Amino acid sequence: MARLIWPFGTGMEAGPTWSAPGWVRSLSAPCAVHRGCVENAEEEYAEMDVLVVPSLEEVFGRVALEAMRNGCPVAASDTGGLADLIEDRRNGLLFPAGDSKALASCVLALAADEALS
Image (cartoon, rainbow, N blue to C red; front, side, top):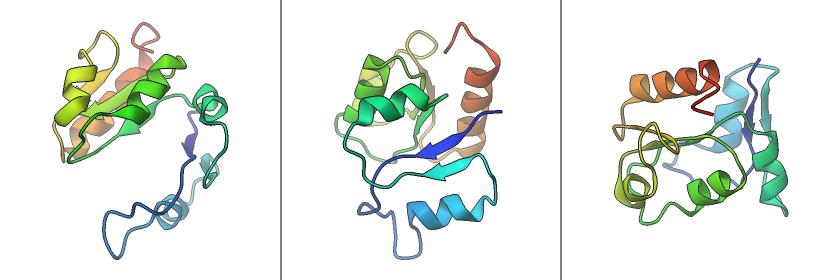
């Protein structure tokens, strides 16, 4: 079973009613874990089955780059620096920004195909 690990902080909320911990708790899944701010991100990447970067806007994609450097498969939206950094189906999977069904398909593809991860 894949685990959802939300390792990073809560200061970058996407809106007034959204927060990472609340969203994770709403899953009601024992496989969902929120770690909050962490000192050593490399350890977190090692525990992840996949990193999802669903940004609507992204200048560079540092988190995706760090995850890839640490061997963590990445599914990311095809926006900004992420689209420049990730070659779809070579070093990660891309999906259209804002398309939750495509995001889910990428995560399932990474979970099902060891060659992609």
